[in-house]
Image (tube, rainbow, N blue to C red; front, side, top):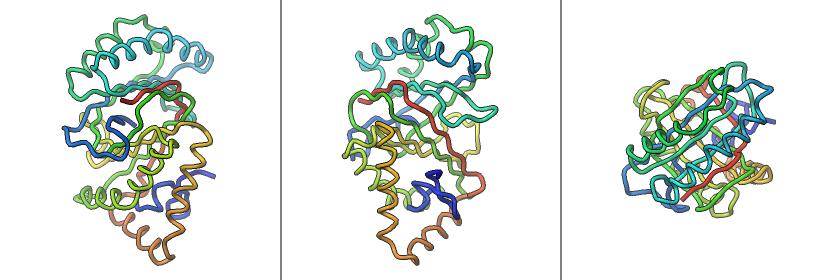
Length: 261
């Protein structure tokens, strides 16, 4: 069963009145500093090249991001492979996060110096530049977890109300999951350079394992069970009022390697 329930379709967030990457601050803390930048680069790689491409990027790109994290340029990075594929969507991606745009550009320039895999040249490519409005994470490296991106589109003028409702209902559950180690981190991302509607919000989680995905599911189900049927319906009604539910989309990927400060 899909984890997303919205009007009968499951969602780990919709039951809390909401339906990547900037997972930078200590667990359970809201940053006072300006919202960090996250750059996301995605490619569509031919099916017969998937394994080889992942090995190649771990060999040529991962050391660059590790070095830039060590010298303080970056405060987070990650590599991932799409888990739920679509006909035209990306198959592989990388993100890196910095507290300033200079750090984003330094990493981009360094990555461009690395050898270029032929399969990347042959497929589609896209970039995203994001800013995080909410975030929480645990320090350290992650392998074998899952990246989940839940994209919501706000109705005009409703973004502030949505944020308040999300912070009240979803954030406490996510903070607890970070503390328990099921989540390496989470964030709510907005595009800084818009390639989608300006009202889009991306709720991003990075889990630590497949078993952690079940733990996350159970935590949101338990939170929903504490509410009366009337309270659950009221939250669902608020979600319909604040968001365009038909515009909701999800993306899931397997994390090859990631690190958070």
